[in-house]
Every structure is written in C-alpha cells, then in structure tokens.
Image 1 (cartoon, rainbow, N blue to C red):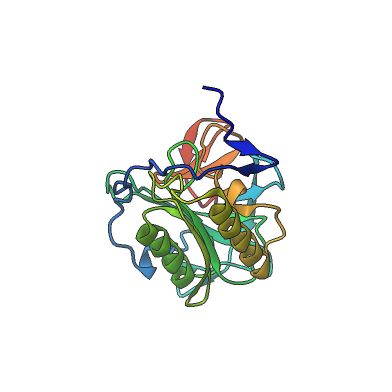
Image 2: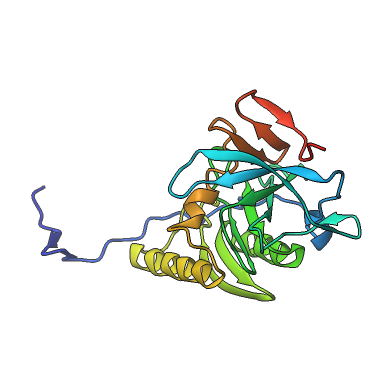
Length: 229
C-alpha cells in the first residue's frame, strides 16, 4: 500500500516473527564411537577426492593405514574418514568411506545440509570426534558444527527441517563465520568446507559419492565396495 518500510540499508520498523515452532527433524538412532569404525577388509581403498570450489569429485585409490584391524584416518596423507547417517526415518543406515581434500589435522566437521537427501555428513580425523560432531547436529535438531577433541568449537543450529534457521540473518552470518574460522583452525584450506560437504552425498554428480547405503560410482550408477584389493 505504498508504505515505506526500509531506507538507506536499514529497516524503519521491526518485522514480526511469524516463524512456526520447528518440528523434530532428526530421527537417527543412538550412535557410538564404534559406529564410525571401518574394518580393514583390504589394503587398497577407494577415496573420494574433493576438488576446491567444485561439486564434482574425483575418484582415487590409495593404500590405507589400519590398526588392530580397523582403518584409521591418515592426516599426513590427507585421507580422512567420511560418514553419512540417515536421519529422516531412523533406519540406522550409515555409510562409511574415505575422503581427501579437507586437510584436517585434527577434529571433525558435520552438517545436516547434504543434497539431495539431506542426511548427516561427517568428516573427521577420529571416531570420537566424529561422534561428538554427529551428536551435536542431532542435539541442535539439525545444523552445522566443528569440533576439536572433546570441545564443540562452533555451531549453527538449523532447527527448521535441519536445513534452515529461525534466527535473524545477522546471527546466522556470525555463526557461519565462526564455523569457517574453526575449520581453518583445524587445518582446512577450503573456502567453505560445509558447501563442499553438502555435495559429497549427492549420487548424481561424478564421480564418486557416499550415501547412507554406501559408496556410489556415479559413472556406472552402482554401489561399489570401499576396498579394491
């Protein structure tokens, strides 16, 4: 009706918050550190290669480190554990794989924004830190987080379907900056690792992706084993 509501980059009057109370969007079963253990079923494994500022990924193979029959993240060679946890219906599906390109020296990153299924994606250097990151996302009702050891360094709650915030833009922006700063503190050189994580579980973009049902070779459109030999 021709009413002036904003001028010179600012609002002239406060807007009413019409956001409905968020509904529960996290239905993953209880996780444990063992949930993120990868049995050493071979010596050479497939590795998802993250390409900076790209949603496509490469597909590599590498000899993997293991201890007492379990695969360990190899921070020296930038081969980290990756997990995708189904969080919509509580199936208990959990896909495990390996990824390079994040260069984390320690800690873990997690997010419930992961196109198109938007399950929880976690990349980390240890099972304990991956568990803390996943549980932090679950406790928030969805969101993004960065952890180091036993501490949550930064987080951004996304309680609306695990995808959106119910807070003002300024709050979200500040939380996001803290997440990016935390990721850099952990050693990640990517401009926005959370954006890259959002596409690691999208099995229609070449060439290797991870879903809650396992690794997907997008070129052949088939689920493939983690180990090659």
